[in-house]
Amino acid sequence: MTAATTTQALVSVEDISLSFGSVRALRDVSLTLRPGEITALVGDNGAGKSTLVRCLSGIHRPDSGRIVFDGEETKFSSPEDARKAGIETVHQNLALVEDLTVWQNLFLNRELTNPLGLLDRKAMKREAQRMVSTLAVNVPNVTSTVRRLSGGQRQAVSICRAAGFSSKLVIMDEPTAALGVQETERVEQLILKLREDGHAVLLISHNFAQVMRLSDQVWVMRSGRCVAGRRTAETTGEEIVALITGAKQS
Ligand SMILES: Nc1ncnc2c1ncn2[C@@H]1O[C@H](COP(=O)(O)OP(=O)(O)OP(=O)(O)O)[C@@H](O)[C@H]1O
Image (cartoon, rainbow, N blue to C red; front, top):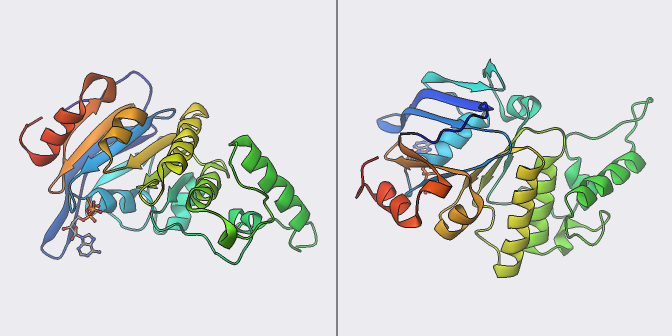
């Protein structure tokens, strides 16, 4: 089981296991993620993908094994800890506040204050504009409320939020599942931009064409195990499907 290159890993998951009562959601899972690469995580429903992501993002602690992030073993006890270390997650159910503006959402829970301790709205708006321009995000104005944005624009804001604030790993759980063709294309461009900017991206997707189009490596999960890893250029959609179902052993 390999998906090797010479670039040093940003994340090494080493033999982690996690059970919920009698359900063994993760069994001795090991994999690596590299900076400047898009890694796809694939597997059938219930294979353990979300549980693994929740371990990376500080929601769950594995029962055994360890996760090394940026050279240090993680001891996250909350998503806030993971975020501080540089791990951001873009959730499937777009975690934005509808009634707030784009800039308020970008700075939610990390508001900038001036030397007097007051909210520095000007600085936040300016910085939000910079973040949006850097990623070439297609939103009309950072002062628009999120309620007025399309699904694709909302996802773009979520990605922008995750890419900012010096994050090193951006985890995306089905980022285009709810989007139309054109919006999907735009969001895929953003994901490629994250790679270009040196982020490690972990992409959970049931869309094999998307996985083959975007990823540099693919890890396959089945029944709580990570059963195979492949460089995307050296595999096919058919092989990945066979590994997912178990028709092919790694
Ligand atoms: N909090 C929990 N409590 C109990 N069981 C859980 C919990 N979270 C996940 N599980 C179980 O762990 C297993 C792995 O689930 P997980 O959600 O990680 O799979 P998945 O690969 O993300 O699936 P999907 O593609 O459907 O999202 C499943 O059997 C699931 O029912």
